[in-house]
Image (cartoon, rainbow, N blue to C red; front, side):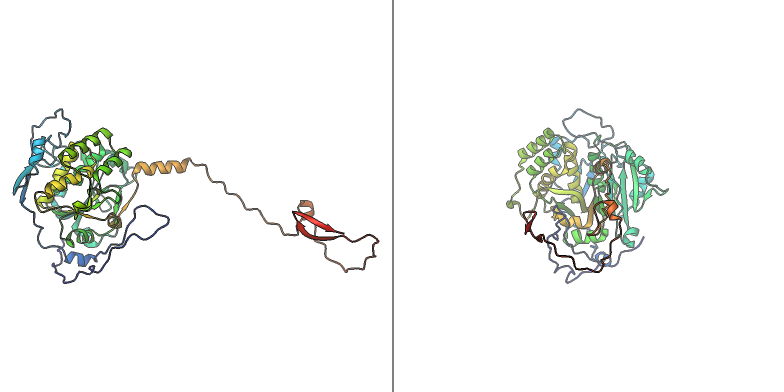
Length: 447
């Protein structure tokens, strides 16, 4: 494996004088769009990689609950995969100590992916165990998105970063109709992992397993970048890590929503958009209100938002960030799968107990390093609309006739008479008629 260049400490960062400017004006694109971001060249970014892991406040060792003989039970929330933690256990998980054991998915076994639900073949688990340093991960379940290939990836990243794409069997079958998956289980840069025995019937909720529990699937990885299946990564992973983690000395970064900052507003937007059934959203928000959830205001500063745009997560795998995503996943398992609704509750509970928080950067910065595509369903709808439109009829332009051409075809074919020598006409006894300017669309005649 290629070695990293020696770490350096700079007196002045090359981007320190860079000022964030708003997205450039584009009359054709009035919605959210990217803004300029200052990245370092990959070689310089690598040199600024921290030599030691970030400190984890208070929590030093995190273990995970397992119960092999757990059986399904009638419950108002939770799942067999999540272990049905009680509300008492949920409250206790925020009592942060140096040694902790919490529910964190995969409860029915010691090895995630081995008869735990979200099952993964042994060859795939082995390769995931061998992945070290950094992983870029994504997932497509329910054939919901179109696989996107990363772009602008350096040779060093191709050699040292793992790229893993999780699929269900439905998506794998659809991919095989259009793409060749070679014997190494790769499609371009992506190492494909097919997941079986999915824990949920909802494809979007299944996607929360790798999104929030990458530290359980890749136990030897130090950094991870999660991108939703609808996104294409267009910057080198080390540039992204340097810009959003190392430069700011943070261990967890996520973009805030481009428009909404308040959980109550986000809940109403989810209901209006039919993202989840309204009763479940109302139940979750009412539960959080009883726990003390309030509207976002400037009183929360330096916290800049309560609502993330959760399609990208950049993180260092240390005990406190692992705890955060475990407890965030437990909320998604207990309540709705809309992780934007539970993010701030988990963040603020941890923040009230230890000196740690999730850093939130601008959404326009996120849009600079990932390009968003439509979900497959929307793309197919757009294509169907285009196919249903009647074909456009091309109208041949009319040939312009010369000004002196006759309107009748038989006259138009006559040769033009050349002017002859003018002879003096005999004076007529009748008065001459002179035509003058057009008035009111008719010619005025003067005698």
